[in-house]
Each structure stands twice: as C-alpha cells, then as structure tokens.
Image 1 (cartoon, helix red, strand yellow):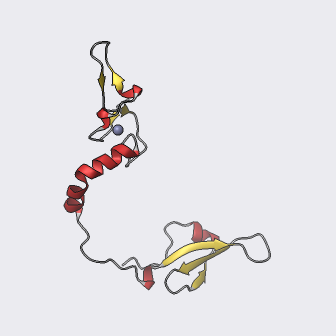
Image 2 (cartoon, rainbow, N blue to C red):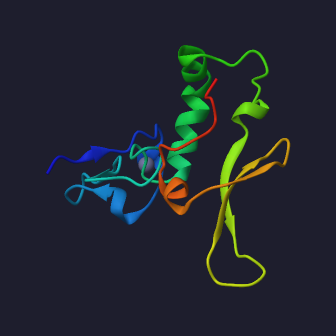
Image 3 (cartoon, protein in one colour):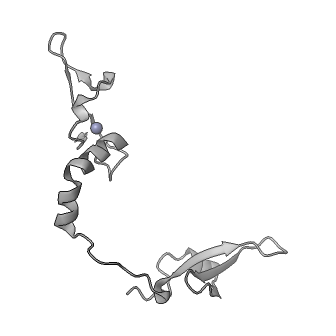
Length: 124
Ligand SMILES: [Zn+2]
C-alpha cells in the first residue's frame, strides 16, 4: 500500500506522539504518512495543515488557476433548486422545483427529483 504524505508545510513541526519517529537518540518529528487523508481532497492530515498550505500557497494558486475579477451572476433561468415538503394531509412527499429568485414553484415527480442529471436550469 502506497502511503500519502500530508502536504501541510509545517506538519512535521507539530509535537504529537504519532509524528515522533526513529531510533532512540535520533528521533525526529516527521510529516504524517497515511494510506488516506480526510481533508483537502485527501491531501492533508487535518484542518491546520490544510490552512497552513493555503496561507503559504493560496494566493499563488488562485492567481494560477484564475482569479475572479468581476461579479458572477446566477440568473432566474438558473436559479431552480429541487425541494420537497409534506402536504398538509397525507404522508407522501411533494416534490417541486423552486426558483430561488422568483419563488415560482413547479411540480416534480420523484423520479425527476432523484435523477441528478435532470434539471431545467439552462446552465449558462
Ligand atoms: Zn499534516
């Protein structure tokens, strides 16, 4: 099994027993290695390491992959979200589309609700 290394730049500086490794007399605190990590798409052992990385490299990463420099708009055509509620009488759920801007509701079948590919947003 290949072990992954925590990408936190300061991971090795935190004094926890699981990081302290090596023979007596030559012990060191080491970057955590695990088969999988839970944070930051599996790149970091904990939130602290994730935020340390972002503090050190975040500006470069945002600039590299495209800094947002103008307001983005979610228009009425793309403001539909799926929702459900219980009717006043009865136990069967009501499924519907809700336009979060106009507040218009349109009925949905349960199949349409469950289908993650089904949308009436135009995606522009
Ligand atoms: Zn770490």
